[in-house]
Length: 270
Image (cartoon, rainbow, N blue to C red; front, side):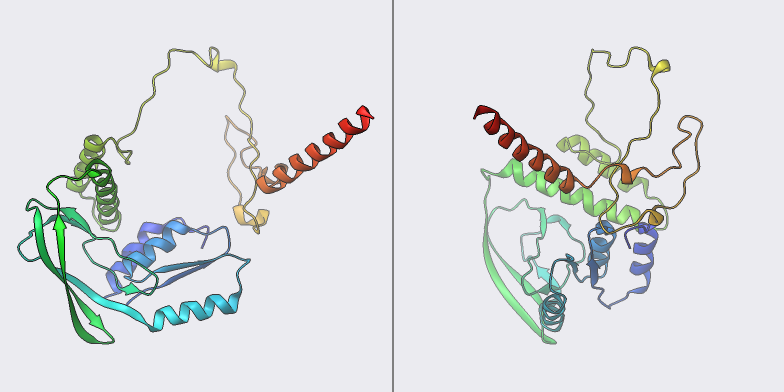
């Protein structure tokens, strides 16, 4: 799954055919497409579990089976009473499983104490839990909370934008405006740094070279395929990942060199 490139097509297909079913994603290894797996769990109203190769397979399988068999609350809805919040996220609340939490965000205009009711199913039976919550007029962390809300709003709108068959210009404008209002980077907003120093005075004479990069651990050269060569970089089709070891190996070599240098210095002092 690490080399799937049509993520949004996969997510759109899941959204179209899943209905009331649930989807749980499971990833094993280090070279995973975490974006796709996480979004599959989100669209499928389930969750995503990643397994590191160093973990015990039986322990992980047992934990996963227990979580799947015992959801805490399913088909969750919230009765907000007279609070009347706006711009709530997520639009579809996922099921709640043991060891997880669900964060619902939105804007409110009526501050003070309000009673809300969380509704759902517990073991197939309807359940309601009333909560009395104090919504302050002003909060000391208001600016930080506003940024968290804006990031979540951008993420939610991008999900809607990317999983629809047709492009929605209104959603694009909303994302752009959120980025401008809260100074956040989006697909259509960015931070621009202006420097007066000229770092490349002769770009015509600057040569193009392949930059060796380490391969993903546990993946061989054949997984990267063959790319066409270009005129500006004739060697672009050559995979040069094997030229550079993994960062962990580089750190190990650096540590060995430091130890050898320490013993040589002590030896010379004697």
